[in-house]
Length: 162
Image (cartoon, rainbow, N blue to C red):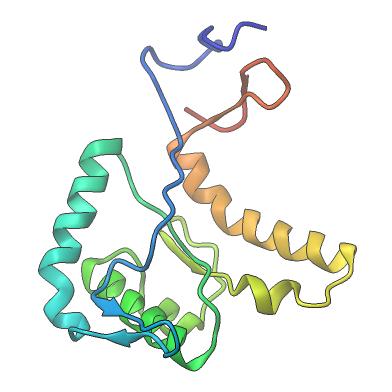
């Protein structure tokens, strides 16, 4: 199939789903032998986070979903707490998601903490498959709102609503 063909029923124009990798968008530092330390309180990081968020939304013309892969260990837990604080203050997550409490599937969820190492450590293939399916179930509402195409088989096919 032609990967540039417009699938039937989709609006004119381009659509993309972009994955950006990076560190938690809060102010922190880490020495080679030490734990991560916040260099600003989350409330003081808000203006920079809001600019970062606005730039991402403008550049990609849509919502940003944060998938936090930090481990639940003391140094990284501080980064998770700071990230959840700014996301909550910005409105990307609700009260029930702060501190990783919720595993809800709300249509407004734009954040998920998935401690990859803890989830897959010594997991069997079936356990890993269940964890990945759980992750995908959390992403589906976002992907459904965003729309995307799957070109893994060499032909663009509609994988979610446009």
